[in-house]
Image (cartoon, rainbow, N blue to C red; front, side, top):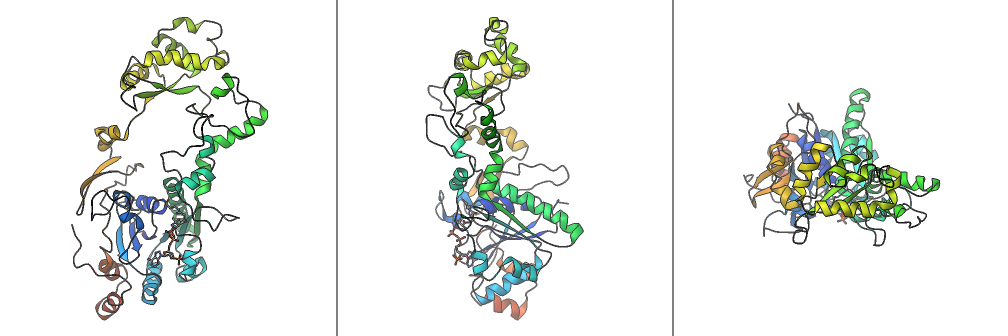
Length: 424
Ligand code: CAO
């Protein structure tokens, strides 16, 4: 049995934020019915194409474990089918531009009228307020949520991160809201609206930087490198380069081969508790007792020198050798892994975090599997659906249309061109 078996999800999502949410629900066993515009589908199907004619990796990697129905939700028959879907489903998830669902005639009030038990989950760029009508993409959310202003080096511009904290981060938040609402429904018998703004989700993930904003009132942030360098702080949390956020000094240091390999680096943290071990490992035992080095506060104005000295040592080792040497001493280090190295990491395939998926149009590709492991609900990653692959199946099996009724719907043009047989 899968954790969410029996839960039907009307997946009205597109691009990245919404699809990441419904994909997780699918991994946990929900029946995810992706509703797509006839003949067009989710725009990502044809974005960043690498195999001509095939659904893109952008789409396939975000839409596993779903079924696809083509449906024009603006045409009368389409609205009739959508109403039936709302009646049948437990959850509706959408991330259209603000107001789009209302313009289709499906406001939250109307949806509740159709099905008072339904949970309606929405992602928008901003919460209620002056920006509520804006369309928002990943990097806009990273900027508006405080991540960009606190990422990068002090003397450089703000930076966005490679991790999609605006899109996938919000999808994760929404997913938690949905299962929480499902849990509450067990007792209340009622559905509810779950809303996540991308700005809010990014801010939640950048929480420690708001912590530092408030600490600034009490004086300089001593664990930031700029304190040791004697550079005054301004009014806002500054960019801290690769400093570690937890109060223990840390940096990214070069390792053997850095001249050729852009990822021959390690993260290295000099926690107070393991300082003496660091001194021994890097061949500086005198620092264990030397004034100016022995105690953490004394080291703060020498961090550049200390890390340069540690780097002289890490540059004689590969990033994996640094890990092998430091780990037994509990010295926190981490190799900077490239996507190529991750894609070849058999350990990640063994846990199901990385998966190989077969696809009728593109053959085998790699994807990230479910990163959340439930001991009693195993995840099997199945390929993303082709556009409208399950239209007839959903109309008949989920909505109960048959005979003339089914023909009326399929002949109306509301559900696209019917595919003869699902491709395998
Ligand atoms: N049948 C008929 N019409 C459909 C349809 C269907 N099955 N599915 C979608 N549409 C219509 C919508 O109703 C909308 O029509 P109106 O403009 O008349 O209301 C239209 O398609 C376009 O939808 P959209 O405005 O949501 O799409 P967009 O490409 O213009 O904007 C995005 C994309 C992501 C900026 C916007 O949807 C948005 O701001 N979403 C919320 C925030 C979000 O999730 N952003 C992250 C995206 S990933 O980076």
